Amino acid sequence: MAPVSIQNVSKTFHPSKGVEIHALRNVSFDARPGELLVIVGPSGSGKSTLLRLIAGLERPTSGAISIDSRDMSDVDPKDRDVAMVFQNHALYPHMTAYDNLAFPLKLRKVPHLEIDRAVRATAELLGISSHLDRLPADLSGGERQRVAVGRAIIRQPKVFLLDEPLSNLDAPLRTQLRGELLTLHRRLGTTMIYVTHDQVEAMTLGHRIAVLHQGELQQIGEPLDLYHHPVNTFVAGFIGTPAINLIPGRIVPDGARWLFVSESADQPALRLFLPGVPDTALRHQVETPLLMGLRPEHIEVHPLSDGCQQHFDFEAVVDRIETLGHETHLQLMAQSLCLTARVAPDMQITRGATVHVALRMDRAHFFEPVSGKALR
Ligand SMILES: Nc1ncnc2c1ncn2[C@@H]1O[C@H](COP(=O)(O)OP(=O)(O)OP(=O)(O)O)[C@@H](O)[C@H]1O
Ligand SMILES: [Mg+2]
Image (cartoon, rainbow, N blue to C red):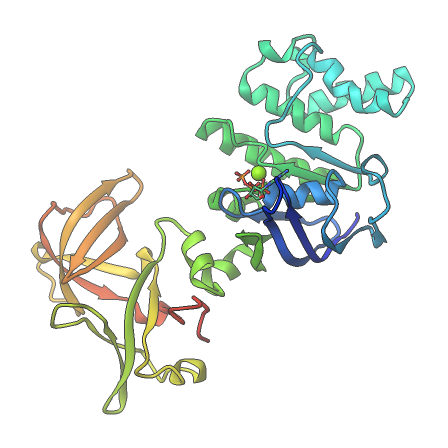
C-alpha cells in the first residue's frame, strides 16, 4: 500500500501566446497508504489536471509529487506503477472486452496463460464474464465502465487514479457501481484517488475528501468533518444538499445575551438569540458585517394549522415546495430573506401558507463576508 504525496504543486498552461491558465496553485496533501481519497470540486477546478500530474501525463510547473515515498520528477508514466481510469473511459473500439482487459498485461509482456487467468478473474470480480467477446459498441454504458475499471485494476498497481468513472451513468447504476467500487477497494486495499464533481459521491465513497476550487485546495478531511466544520463559505455551500443558507447580518450584545441581527433592507430585521457566549474569533467581529450559515436541516418549520404553540423565531411564507418523496424542501420568504428548509415528507403544507420558523442557532456557522473564511 503506497502513500501519495503532493507538495506545493502548481500547474500553469499556456494555450496561446501571452495566455496563462493557472489550473492548480500550490496544492499540498497526502493520500495515506490504502486510503480511498476523493477529490471533489466544480468543473474546471483542476481535478483531472491533478490526476494527470500524479500519473505523469503532465509535468508540474512547480512542486513535487512522490509515490511510495519516491520522488516522481524524473519517472516516466509507465514506470510509476499507477493505473488510471480516464474521465471519458476510452476503450479501444476495435477490441473485444477481453482484449481491452488484456491490453495492459500484453504491453508488459506477461505470459499468455497468466493474462488469460487475470482477465477471467477480473471479469468475474466485475460481473462481466459473459460479455468478454463483445466489442465496446455492443456493451451498455455501465458494462463499458466496468471494462474500463477492470483494465485499471487488472495489474494491481500501487495506486489507482479514477477520473469521474461513473459520470456517464444513470442514477441507479451509479449507486450500484459506487457500492461495487467500495467493495472492490476493500478487497484490494490499494491506495485510490477518486475524482468527482458530485458531493454525494464524495461523501459516500471517501475516507477523506479534498475540496478543490479554482485550482486551490480548500479543505481536506473526513466527510463529516467537512459537513460540520467547513473552513469557508465555498466548502459550506458545496458539501450538503440543498446548499447551506447564508444570511448576512451582525452579532450584537443584548443585555447579558448575544443576538444575530440579519441585515435586510426592510424592517424589522430578524433578531435571533445565540445559545451562549460567542467564542473568541466571533467576539472580534461583534457589530461588524458577517455571514451566518445555517443548513436546511437546521431550520424547523411549524405550520400554523398544527395547533401547537411551539417556540418560534419568526414567521415566513412558503414560496416553493419541492416534494422528493423521502423529504420535502421548502423555500421560505421571511421579510426579504429567502431560506431553504428541509422538512418531513408528511408535513401538510401549501404554497403561500404562513408558517412559524425556529432556527437551530446552536448549529449556526459564521463566516467573514469578504474572504468567506469560517470564524471560529
Ligand atoms: N491542456 C490544457 N491546456 C490549457 N488549459 C487546460 C488544459 N487542461 C486543462 N486546462 C484548464 O485548466 C483548468 C482545470 O482543468 P481540469 O480539466 O483539471 O478541470 P476539472 O476539474 O477536471 O473539470 P471537469 O469537472 O470539467 O472535468 C480549466 O480551466 C481547463 O480549461
Ligand atoms: Mg475533469
